[in-house]
Length: 161
Ligand code: FES
Image (tube, rainbow, N blue to C red; front, side, top):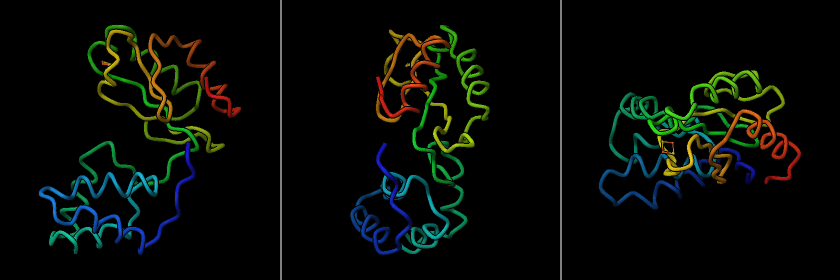
């Protein structure tokens, strides 16, 4: 996974300006900021509020509402376990429980060594190969607990499958 840029107000303003003129700009702006910085930094809130003529509370509300937006920087890799229907029927909850236990984190948390952040997602478009996970930008299907352990070991060592 690419290194996350440290917070930069100039860079943030530049990202916001890319979306300034489109309708419903808040979500694209938030996605743009998270893509650049890995999370929505606190100083982004007043910038967003100013740019869109919203209150800071309104911006906070949107950031909190959507699970996609992180408040803190993720680990070097982000593991997303699908929890939508097809994956649920193929053992996604057990896989998520295994991931939590294997990594010693809860959903939304990062491992102590900073290697992995564990998140959940609703459908990765890989339903025919449930249960599915995404590690960084890489999609995997029919992931058993043992296969997940092997994948995580590969990513931890920097040699993604
Ligand atoms: S339900 Fe998991 S990929 Fe679609």
